[in-house]
Length: 410
Image 1 (cartoon, rainbow, N blue to C red):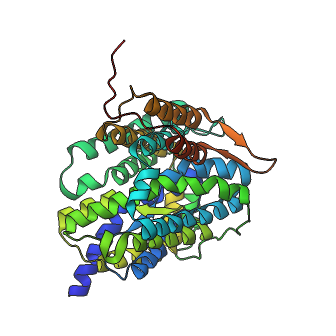
Image 2: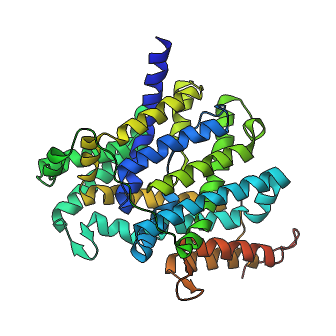
Image 3: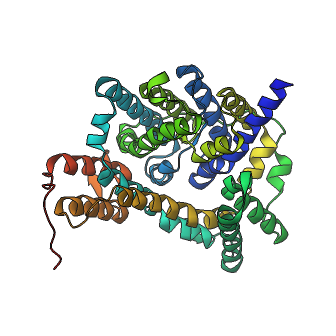
């Protein structure tokens, strides 16, 4: 009876994380089945490394959406997988830094004036894609009629907004999933869902594996992208600790949680799934249910692995119309940017200080403007990867303003 109760709790955790988990592959063109498999196995690897002491479930990372789209267009899926696999090693580097010097050095390298604008770039760098999908456009072509697309996007967006603001209890944790379900039902009523692939799909099937292609250019592009979700991971581990009353930065240790997350990222990238990260929705579920057993995360992971082999289910996911995703993206990417803005505000970053103004301005302009740094004919840096490196260099090189410095308004 206890097993059944814990398994249902695990299923509930997966249900909370599900909408965001499968959204990333649907937006980027990766296989949803691989996202489920990567999240499931990645969470199990995390629990093994941390010896089953931290109640955390790992799901698809939003930070990689823009970089994945760009990498697939530039180098192809196989090379992108290699880049995502390589991104996991950034976690190992940070784990070694924490073990060597503690979290103080990370705070020195990545203060809020660096992290805040980087997160803003993550959200706004793909804002154009969100609007295009909401209008039913893909690759510059109108794949769904404009009128129907705007209507579907509006329904999905409004549902997500209403649930996130007005819903109570567990439902409040499911705004994305609610938006997708209502948008999908609306699309079915409008005759915009093709059921033939669903009918043709097998009930159970082996997920399609895309061969990995070694590309150091893609790896160099993806490595710095992991910085933002690493900071998110550190914050999430501390947040979960506050909920459960445990200090997981000491036991099992932040270096182990980072290493476990990194190992999961490597596995997910290797099989063709998006990198995984901690989910605030899961932390919210812990607060509501008060079930802090890490074992329920293991059950959630096992269920995710099982769903990866459910062919009909994955065919349904792939049948979701483009505008439904676009409507949710309009809110999602803006929310990511807003989190970056909140990071700057909470840290009381004074933009009247020239040093701070320079760092924020350079990051936003280069990141959103699409600046590309060409190293040679095959290797270049752009997007989140480029601005992360620029931000760290500027933060280290520019002199700190005197604490007593006063700023007289013009």
